[in-house]
Amino acid sequence: MPDLKKLMPGQIRYTPPQFYQGEVDTFVWFRCWHPIEGKMKRKKIKLKRIKNKRERRKHANELIRKLNRELESGYNPWMEQESANAFATVDEVFDRYLLFKQRDCKTGGIRKDSLRTDTSFISVFRKWLKENHFDLVYIMELKRSHLMQYLDHMYLDREVSARTRNNHHDFLVKLGRWMVSQEYCKANPAEEIPKLREAPRRRQPISAVNKVRLHEFLQEHDPHYLRLCLAAYYCLIRRKELCFIRVKDVYLDRGYIYVGHEVAKNRKERSATIPKVFEKELRSLRLDDCPPNYYLFSADGFKPGPEMLNPKKITDVRTKYRRQIPLPPNNQFYSLRETGITDMVHKIDPHSVRDHADHHSLEITNGYVAQDMKRASEIIRNKVRGFTDPD
Image (cartoon, rainbow, N blue to C red; front, side):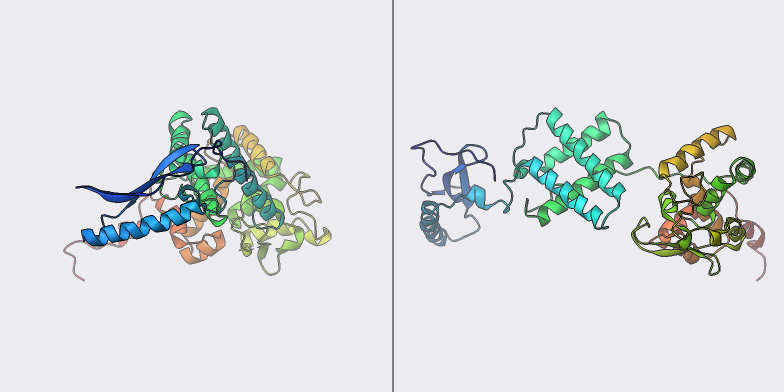
């Protein structure tokens, strides 16, 4: 633990406790050296809750005798009220948090992307503390007010979206919970900070016309990338998950692609069903002739191969083709999965789509229906009877 501010030779460490009784308040008070602030600080213990004055005075005398014994033996209220590790430095705590996360990543507890995100959040927060001259030494000095100012800076000064600001908020809450678990503080300083209301996410499914245009273009210029796109649309496999799928994970005869827990976004294994309309596309790859450990979509032009595909390459190629076709800017790679979900929820029961999409609740799946309500229901239009029609 770092050196705390120490008393000068001959300087008193505390003053004897005294009793005070007034019209408004009654308490026992004394002063004691505060090692963080480097000065004598007043400590007050209120006794107003004891209604009987005689009992109040009796309790005060007992309290003063007890405090005198404890102060003489080294008791310091400013040290006792903090957690066991409250005097660790801010830098020590941040570094140790990242050390834990690095270990979690190495053992498979979290993904590399999660570690990269946490490292970025710590870096941005550290930089802000330094640039704003918050000379915090010990983690006990990090208060809710600092976190509020930081979040306000992100939202007002850097003008990030409410969603991005809330992402920083969620990280601070997660960091605070870890600090409590490691006894750096007794309460999470971020727990009571409210989140901002976010604008609803507007999903833009790919229109039928643009699906045809995309399919025809890729069929002619890049059929391997087309299969990758169709895997996202039909099997609802996420972009990063697609990069990890190997030939041995594809069970054509059983009709599914295995997505392992170390690959899945939510760390839960699942079987992504292969619709029959997509099965023939996968069979054209002649996977039986490929080594089992080959990646289904590799860095070798999205064909089965030994080198893992970088997720960024998928996005970069998608952007290039989107401009060449051309397609609207809001038609991104993730639009394929979202379009697949939207198309399915109108024809298949929501529970099956929920499981296929790897959603943790039906509410998320139903959100795709709500976002696609800019059309009339033909059943309602044609089947509802007139107000006065007989049954």
